[in-house]
Amino acid sequence: MNTELSIEFFPPQTAEGLLKLKGERARLAALKPDFFSVTYGAGGSTRARTFAIVKEIAAEGFDAVPHLSCVGSTYTGIRETLEEFSALGIRRIVALRGDLPSGMAEAGELRYANELVEFIRAETGDAFRIIVAAYPEWHPQAKSPEADLRNFVRKVRAGADEAITQYFYNADAYFHFVEKIRDAGVEIPIIPGIMPIVSFHKLARFSDACGADIPRWMRRQLESYADDVESIRAFGLDAVTRLCERLLKGGAPGLHFYSMNQASLILEIQRRLGLEAQSGAPAQ
Image (tube, rainbow, N blue to C red):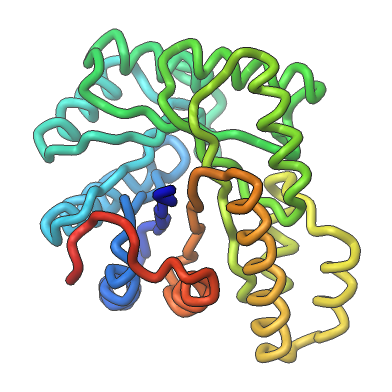
């Protein structure tokens, strides 16, 4: 079975960061991913930088997949962005609600991801494969697991083709989520989001903000290493590789890596999994 591989970047703020990202992306190109995705800041705050990186990726011969968030946006603005994507030859979009930019009080004309998915379909038909977000451990703002599940089903019924999950470290959470949505009649692929562990302090901060759980056994072990970078790296590689192995063995259709614009850990995890280069994208 072909295993889908995708890798996510964020737009750096400096010329030095952009140069570094170009080098890391060149290393990851050896994996022949199905696509590279690029995040889109709150309210489109990184729009120009996202577009620049998407153009670079496309020019390198890879499938470039921009994120598109709708909070704080207008129908006219989203329509113009879709036209720009189409002109670039983009064929996949990660459609998200997104977060309001700091200081902005109004959500804009589109409030939720299902409204964005519905609008993309109405405007462009089947021109784009639409990818949405999924939350195996439930969205931190959801009133209940049942409410979050209903929100996800709405996105799918609006026209989503595929979902990528928030990262997690408990495989059972993913399998439980997939079982629940299958029971709800949803059959689209659900790609697990994978976060390699670079720094425990950064991971803890991200996880507290987005609602991703770090299991107690992992948290305590990582805490015990303090600032021992090598021990954190070795433990993280073992734990994340085992997670990926279990997910793939259990039927996950692929893996989506949150790269944090770093290649080394992803390359090592793929090597351990024996999945160095099985997809169809061009080598660089």
